[in-house]
Amino acid sequence: MTTLTRTTALGGLGEKISAYHSRCFFCPHFPFLNVLESTEGASKVWRQGVNSAPAFCSRSAIQSPRAIASEISTTERKVATTLTYQEKMLKNYVPIFVMLPLGVVTVDNVLEDGDKLVKDLKELRAAGVDGVMIDVWWGIIESKGPKQYDWSAYRSVFQAVQDCGLKLQAIMSFHQCGGNVGDVVTIPIPKWVLEIGESDPDIFYTNLKGNRNPEYLTLGVDNLHLFDGRTAVQIYCDYMKSFRENMSDFLETGLIIDIEVGLGPAGELRYPSYPESQGWAFPGMGEFQCYDKYLQAEFKEAATAAGHPEWALPDNAGEYNDTPESSEFFRSNGTYVTEKGKFFLTWYSNKLLIHGDQILDEANKVFVGCKLKLAAKVSGIHWWYEVDNHAAELTAGYYNLKDRDGYRPIARMLSRHHAILNFTCLEMRNSEQSADAKSAPEELVQQVLSGGWRENIEVAGENALSRYDSVAYDQILLNARPNGINKDGQPKLRMYGVTYLRLSDELLQKTNLDIFKIFVKKMHADQDYCPDPEKYNHHLGPLERSKPEISIEDLLEATKAEKPFPWDKETDMSVSDGAGGLVGLLSKLISKILALFK
Image 1: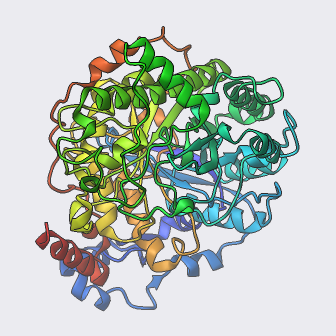
Image 2: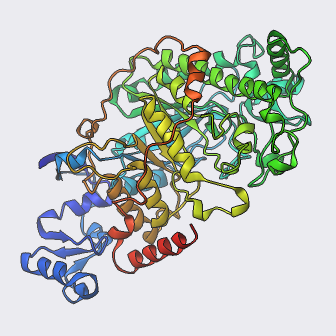
């Protein structure tokens, strides 16, 4: 048993409750009820259980956290807080982060409601959350012109996060906000870039019909000097250099623990194959996005070099909302299994690998020596996973089939940059998906995470959609520790961290927040919040320089399909078990109902 005494500001509800530690007993069967400390009284509560506990927890003897908070001065003063850990159990700890609202800094580069932000951050800190994640929008920072950066609003946000005792994950968001699932605000890429696109629309990803997508620059212009003398990669690099220079103090204090490098639409390493802005709807298979003149020229060159100058980009792959069998390309024994189809799919997915590798190499040069990790996000495209063609994954650039792993090469590429693979859809269960989507999010998560672990890199993850129920939380917990808790130390399989999407008034509504707090505790293996990552084997040393470049041939060796590591059927740290009372009973009932449909 380890006891740590730390000094904290009374800025969060949980810390205010801790000030009453000497006279309060916390009853876990009734979340957030405080019982006057008494060995005899406490033992009665435990013996009688949930149903009879109210007989001993009378209104006069119970105080809610809000009632306690009201008794404590709101003046920022320092108190000692004692945290107790079981050292071996602490090795199972998975830190939990919360994504901040998309528009916390407005499109006009203003932090509009700093007071509310601070209030919400304190709520998260009181809930035991380890940190937050934030999009640092290129379209806001460099909006006034090339190399004209304004970081002032973001500095205010970072300072607030630091003052509240939270850590920070910063996303270098080189994409547009708006046009994707969950986008509630619109933040375009810089106006001066869009103006270049007016005279040269081929700087944007383009589908077969010629529809342009301005949410991210096509990887076809990565190394072309089309932007006032700079290439797209140079733009991204200069932006990150400016970030490091202007946020150096926050880097030095250890506030920023990882930099997630945006590599495509929604910040993900993929093509924008399923844009809602162009009419896509779930579970449409999407469309290939390589018909700008730059990528067309590159494919023509590649096909000619392979001895097939007559090969062209696919013209038979259907439209956004088609089903795979309705297209000549994806139907059984369709183009995708021919020599021509395989060549195209290999080229299309390899371009994505090279794109990610080059930008991460530049990011590594910028942040080398900083005590942080790099990360890249991969999209959880779980629909059409159960059919042979995996059409939705293929149009997005993930050349993944039953006998070909399309994700492990990405993990191998990330390994040379010491980068984390961040994956999505951790909360999803197969039983929750519509049958016509042929969806298998559970198997997809298991495949991607297993590939990352086999490449000896850290894997992290997010939920795809906002959920506030214990069923979703339990699924995240299962994926975070696929084989459960190891009471003797660190489990063989453990995710590096989980980011919950997203901070909102709905999350902070009392019922939702109560369940979320239990989820956080379970992520922490029933241990108190731990401010020292070293204690749960997260060693954050200076970022090392990227390893030598891995040839495309060596990357593609990782496409050999292997069975994923075994997963338990359910988590051994269920939020339902920790909820107690009616909430717990309802959560368990929902879980059982969903299980009937599996």
